[in-house]
Image (cartoon, rainbow, N blue to C red; front, side, top):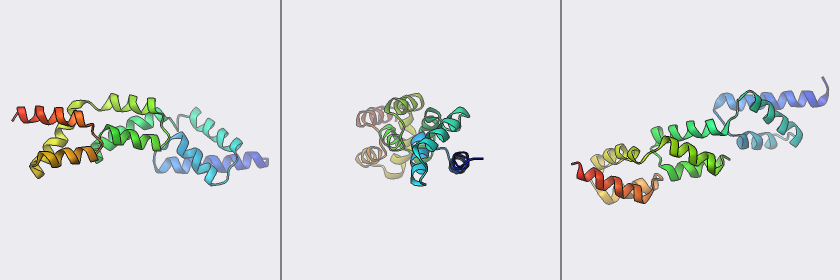
Length: 149
């Protein structure tokens, strides 16, 4: 085994270790390999290998991330899209994942839960804006929610 193959094997093992902890985007793996001091050539080859085995797939990552962030953290589409961009997911891939998972109706359980706890519409609006929901969606959902009471 020559030097290149040995270093490639180490880099691949490092990337697989990262992926065993949680899913990551291509950019996250690339950045971590660069931080570890691996060359561009080694890094690109590792990413190619991981891609061949579908160990990294930004589209799949985005779909899981949207689902998890909405269900577990109660985030809205703006905040989720921002975080996906920070992780290196393209705008198009992020928007597709968000539109596939979130609909306007998804805001109702969050509104109901928060209104029951707080009872104040303005605080609810502020809370939802901070969670990354669109203002127009919040207003429409609050209006519809209040009409059903």
